[in-house]
Image (cartoon, rainbow, N blue to C red; front, side, top):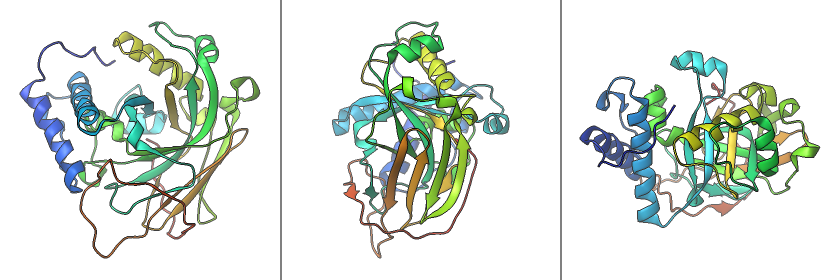
Length: 302
């Protein structure tokens, strides 16, 4: 479990890892894995790296934290990385893409898309011992969501330390626009289909996300409260992938449908002949132009 942030200055190793990831994001050139820069298997140090780069982004770009994402909710991926729990990252205002929007070419390094249930809180969750009933009372509504994960690390060569340090491999996120109260939704029983250019490329159910999205939310709320940074009213929680993530090609357009929640869409601009390198978080996200091309490619859930 992550530890509360230290009152001391970040260690040299933490600063070096944070600088390496930040430079990859700035230049658009993926970096080697950062696990070798940190003490072996030190998850607390990895979260220190994450916090440092999030704080830098807040200061340099005038962004703000609007919620959290949960990763590693698939048992198969947990076994692959040798862990027995999920991880989390921060969601910032300039990571949000409007439903049906287009992500500019060059905005991300190695993007992949996955469909999720998003929860929007109407009340704080400050206690360290959280139950599903607490989450049900605190959630204002649910939305269909797409998370566009990304890795600053070359070839997605990641361990748990790498992905935690890299803000849980966060990139962008898209929320649907038709809120649904949890009283009208069986989050564990929802069925998801993700399509690219009309071709189904990923499927799953709510049960595929840590046994149910509410279980994931309970874990996150308890973990953040124990670290002294609890979930607050208004926060968005991306609860984790419902099916395998899919690699993105330039010009792709995706639509996810989640039963009981509706649909959410995003497109990716075609590659340009000459673009600035780098995944500038401040790049403009444009309304969808309807471009839908690209071949199918599936991967593991994040």
